[in-house]
Image (cartoon, rainbow, N blue to C red):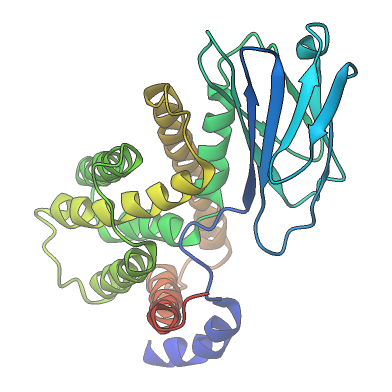
Length: 308
């Protein structure tokens, strides 16, 4: 079996990248409506993202372009929408709308839906739900950890208990960090998340962690993964006066994405076992997880001394 590990090592080095844990590529659009009807917009983008063009509703007149865009708008204009043109297909904007006498609202803007209504009739929680789903499906380290737990733990009951412990733990640290009750720098957290995957892969291959209490290991690692989620959520941002709803929606989206991923992995595994019933699929997957996790660990440790 060690021959298999040596054979896949070059491929792992090619596949692995120094990306951050749970990397999420998004910009932020802050829209404030003042009591006098003035409109103020601030656009924050990733460093290498092309800058889109903002279109204000008809009836708005720009009075300042930088550092934030400010415009005076008629009452009719404030019933319109801000539209983002030339938005790159691979980039999304998390738009926060704040106005007097109404709760803050968050909406996800992307290439196919680039408009933010200034008088919405919904809370925007669906946007955070979608962000959670998209974020977990784009976070390979978290997904591989969940797959690894399914490979390691024997029996449906213990597996459900282990996954529940993992979910409860990462939900706890996500909430604590999102509420600014816990603060840790992100790069060391990302490196520790990769180490947790290495330990799990080793346990799958050697079976040297206790099968009687796997939920303890899963819970401890879940605390780390929750801090990874919190880093991404901090980049996206939460409405300052309406934290609980968006936080719950984001976390629910993470769990829905996790369930979808497990179902897809189960279907793929069943198909592979039909095609090659004698293949050591469990061990090969463990070596793949361990090899990728080890490479991520090295890259993330090296990144600690060379911040970008």
